[in-house]
Image 1 (tube, chains in turn yellow, red):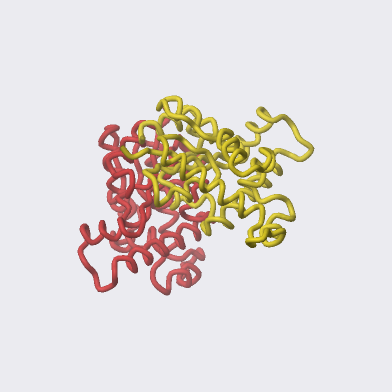
Image 2: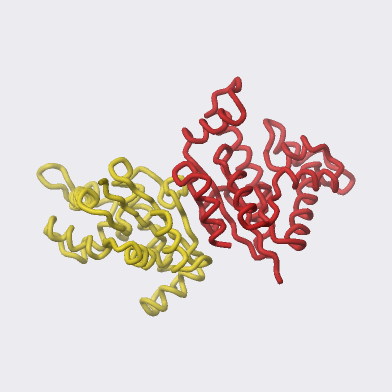
Length: 194
Length: 194
């Protein structure tokens, strides 16, 4: 039997990760989020912190530049190497078992290879700001600035490696506003679609 | 009790209208689509064909120009007058009863005034092309050209009157790919969210 995968892309602070966890729990299948970082660390030799940051976000300032410099003997940047490992790990997971995968361009990586339901979770700025302050506390920047910054870097990373625009509804089978519908309802809907 | 409204925006050929009809039938509430045109015709004195075309689509060539010309004593174009009647009819409907409303910028018109679930239905070009040929037959233009043309005109109209971008997922509580999920499943999900 072919494995069935749900990929969850999400705006920062939308609770997309929790939607993923709850959906997976309801379906009795694993959810890969932080667990994915462990696997990529094991395979690549990079530190987990580096992967968490560089495997999904364009970093401040130097990222696009570094994607073109610091290349190894084969002409690959660290960033490109990390992308290739991430891609391999995600493809192997999808081959191995049915699961939920949060973030990391899994929607794009699996688009032609797996029986995949692609979801996007979003919410308005106010709801997301409340959520990140509740979850991560106050920061030196306003929550709005932190949200915009993360989204912008996620979008830049996604666009660079996939050549598609991040958060464009055409790329997803379903897009849900978790701020209005609620996390639990989002997980219910995804479960019912599986 | 406050009325509850579902608005359905849709790409041409996505089956969004059918999703609306089926959702309304399941919920036992009316669905306004063509019925809306009748009401607007009654109220405005315009012919139904004119409303069907001009109340949602920017027409070929002259529309944006005509939105600024042909103005009456009060400085309104036909187009602006039609918009104001359409707006009034939709607001009155939402005041009167719970219902499903398809198209006509109802999502925008009702955004601050009604207990509203806003949905967007889309599908990929191939699926939509098949659908319009099945429903409306072959035309002189290719189905792809007809789809692109309709979407473009709908987007231009929406943007002109709402100042928002048509089909941007942030503006909708839920967006569904009817080509992958199927019409019936889309209607089921909307029903479950009501």
